Image (cartoon, rainbow, N blue to C red):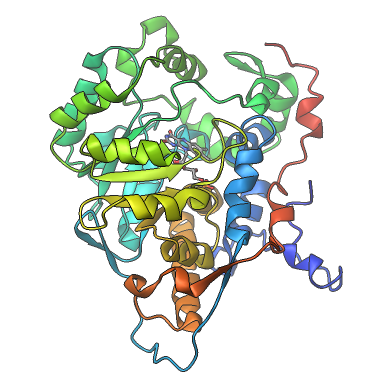
Amino acid sequence: MGDPLRHTGVAQLGGSPRRRYYWGRDLARAVAVEDLRAMTHRRMPRFVLEYLEGGAEEEASLARDRGAYGHWRFMPRQLVDVSQRTLATALLGREASMPLVVAPTGLNGLFRHHADTLLAQAAAACGVPFVQSTMSNDPMEEVARVPGLRHWWQLYVFGGDEVWQELLRRADAAGCEALVLTTNAQIFGNREWSSRTQATKTRLSLPSAIDAALHPRWLASTLLAHGMPAFRNVVDFVPKDRRGFFETAFWIREHQPTSLSWPTVERIRQRWRKPFLLKGLLHPDDVRRALDAGVDGIVLSTHGGRQLDWTVAALDVLPEARAIVDRQRVALYVSGGLRRGTDLLKALALGADAVLAGRAVLYGLCAGGAAGAQRALQILHKEALDAMGLLGVNSVRELGPGYLRAMDDPGPRETAVLGGIRPASTSSSPGFRR
Ligand SMILES: Cc1cc2nc3c(=O)[nH]c(=O)nc-3n(C[C@H](O)[C@H](O)[C@H](O)COP(=O)(O)O)c2cc1C
């Protein structure tokens, strides 16, 4: 575990000169997603950082999400006219500025007030879709009012069928253009940090609460000004005495049926006439099964390493999934570990139609609201467009496995995967009780 501000480049330069990420307040001076991450680490209290950064158990899936990118090296072509290159592409049949989608993330209200709307604004400004989580805090109808937004709805199945039916009805009425059913989170991943930062299910541990109080800028823009955020899209399904922030999250978790299986997917497919995607698949047999169920898209994903630990990464199974999925009919997306424009190009070259980005955009949101999230997307766009030029490619359609070579050397970044949080002060939290 390292210093969050230490630049990974130190390894290559033998420690001298000592590089540091930018961690001030001027978004324009953030030149990489890692700068936005350093700004985030400065601003946010520890329990929020644990929530943002953490994975399940030993965080091996989380580490692999990042490490999988390090496995591939580029084979650039020279003397190609790249003066007309573009990242523009079609996502679910509509134009997007680049093959990237802002991933669904729950509890965004912990990062900033109205965070879901801010993320939607950034996505709309950058011309990419935004997937709103069932566990978001802003009402979907409010988010839908963001001008120019391509709004997708992510569904967690909980409670009885009438719950998802009502959420689908609302998503349709709000103009959501696609539905993304998350399949790998019916049992909540074993995120031990979450227990360590809480004293009880509904209360932070004393050290976490003190640490939160020591972050006045965060406190002022979230809890002090607006109180604990509510889960505005689902709270009506929760019993009245369980509607606090943590209580609602726990209640939903306790009411996610572990019986969720393909018949429900088929029932949802029948009811939802617009594009329908499954998120969380990793096994090629499930990819085949999804095609039989008539989905319009598949998102290979480990849920940001927060569910089953020790899985392969989405990128690891991407070439196999690509061979199964007919590009004309079904979209194939990956999610997990994207921090650089070069990561995006690698995923595309291995067969993805797009990448869903979670933390990279959230770092921007935490660092600077909608402008910060937009900055993250701009950085990724610029990096990818420059790298395309250096690779000798003009359009995303040209990218293919011929531009890559698998190498055993994982590259410099694998060692820095979890560099952000020193766990000692939370794991030794005297307030820990379960
Ligand atoms: C803080 C956080 C909250 C998340 N909440 C959800 C969620 O509510 N629904 C969902 O389908 N995925 C959720 N995910 C997974 C993301 O959609 C995405 O797959 C993951 O973040 C990708 O990895 P990355 O963060 O390395 O880009 C969450 C991830 C994070 C980091």
